[in-house]
Length: 321
Image (cartoon, rainbow, N blue to C red; front, side, top):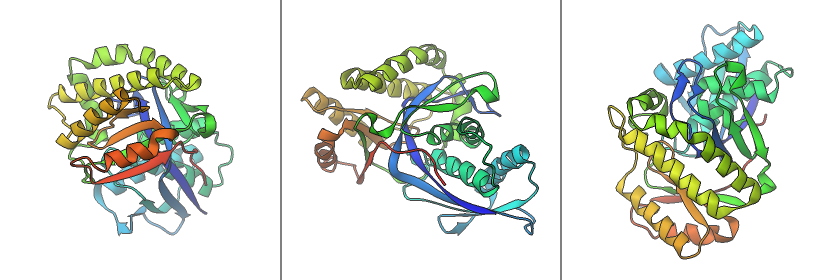
């Protein structure tokens, strides 16, 4: 009983930060994202009746402690759903930096979820339900299950907080040109950061306007309206980081090079390029642009001080086995 699954990372346009239920990872607000083609996690799950506990190999290294505990807890959710008693051997690897604001937990737990269910032969589990299970491991993992552009619905019940595709990858030729300013694992991960959101005086205002921003962004995507898309995406990213910076204790993910890239992006857009920025919980800057300007943005980013590498990803498909 084994299977291998692939899941792309995703970049959120309307952000997820803070939960209404920490245990179930029910988000404070709905969010909107796109999957990133070729920025992925590959995970193999082997359910084995002879094992006495779960085992995890991550990027070629045997894992103990927190990484193994999180994977085992997620496998518990799959075991509970399927009435399984077997432990699992899990072998997982990413083709991009982990813990640096490129949503490695999203692709990791999406791939783990799909591989776990597929290895157990659980064909009765729908995509919608699979997104709710993936959410238990990492909230943003729910968005890496469906294809293309994805909306994750906030709700007060587990089964109602699911993700679904709003448009396929070929709907709009957006490209994420990622300016890597640091590959270091961040000191405070998203899992630890989410509970701090409500310590900020700004979180309630951010959440109150999130649905309006999501509707503006969703309409802009469906209408291919880049100017509206750019304004709301940058505004939402800035709001999330304002909450982080005013939390107690404060979380500062931006680095000097992050600000350099953000300033350059706004200058390039004023000069006529279709590009905007967004940052997840990390210093690396996602420069969203249309395909016509992607090579120019990639070239310009490589000239900026502090940019160590530039990654390129078009809109990607959903998780698959």
